[in-house]
Image (tube, rainbow, N blue to C red; front, side, top):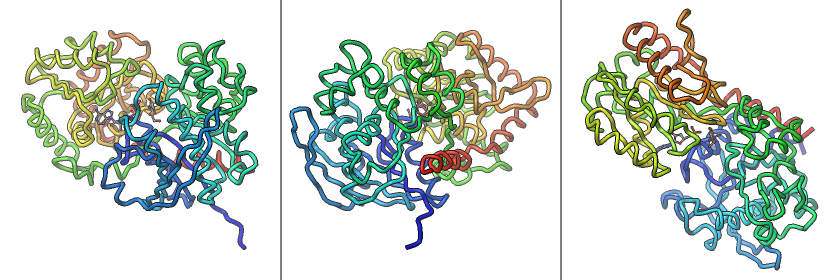
Length: 487
Ligand code: ADP
Ligand code: GLC
């Protein structure tokens, strides 16, 4: 039999567009496997079968079978069902268990989520054995899949899947899966000798799932080079900087891309008017007016329209936005916010809308189609994050000829080249220190170029649309990493 040349990769993670998505992890779990399949690789994506997955996808799934799996310290067994669906060459295997996945959206709270993802990590590996599909690499994502590398080298070491190597990608280090040692011992059923300071332990009382996974993974990646450096420092390391520094030889940063078919202004059915590079200067105005009309803003193409599409959490720099919101507005500027999250921010934006009717729109909701219309209709997108492992909204913005205004951190720093007022070069407006006045200054610089030097603004827009934000280059970097592991 001819030797297989393609690499088999199993992606394991807690969300994946279009089935379930709360943020950029869902986008990456969708786009990267597709890019790898385009490169000729074989990819399966293992996901929980959450009840919140829309029925139209559940209807397309095929039942592959079921088995019982032991899990907990006291040897309780749990049902594992496997449902499968294929889409554009990527095979999706959904793990079914009503006890764990029948509630939540998809997350509930850490207390319930920890058992859920202990079960999911172990069931994913058991399912690969059950399906008799042995990957070369299991590529795990964030804390929810962080136990996979640990199980792989312990409970599954002598089973077929035990031959695979593991990659663990950090999308966001803020969430780690920390709980009491007893809780994790109970739900993982893992032996005491893993509960040491170099694997799971945080202190005398707590254990950390991400920490254990980082110790056991063959390679650790983050979603930008800058974030890979940042997380080895106190400020960004979320308490794991020492651990990451210790494991730095296996740590690497590979910047995210976006799926350029999913995000394509030329073919986007959700836009009132689609446009390519050549038509943007005339057509963007039409999208802008349609958006202003839809959201009850004063309809005027001449205004500078700023957008913000984000989870409303501290990570996203919203306290800076809050602090200078009134100053960012003037009679020629409008702001649209789309997001949900911390009530503190939701209420602040609702308040700004109420006192600036016609000039501010606060859309406190999660709405995929409105997000497309915002990327297509606004002139500039604000991403002033406190930390940003990669950030996808600035990439989507550039693809839609929308100029990003970002803080120079993580992936924002790696993907947005600052506008240079002397040469007119650059992709967007940036600021470095986490200070509200610097955000305001960046907005004022953008405003000046927009109103006083429109030719330069238009050149930035064109450059943004020309920028390669696809997955092609980064998917090849992952592929090199997989090859390195295969040896
Ligand atoms: P994070 O993963 O930290 O939330 P990213 O920038 O990587 O940030 O990805 C955010 C993704 O979620 C983007 O696809 C963005 O369009 C989407 N998104 C965030 N908030 C909303 C919302 N309220 N409605 C629709 N899409 C949203
Ligand atoms: C995380 C990060 C974000 C990144 C996304 C996808 O949610 O917060 O910066 O783009 O994961 O990797």
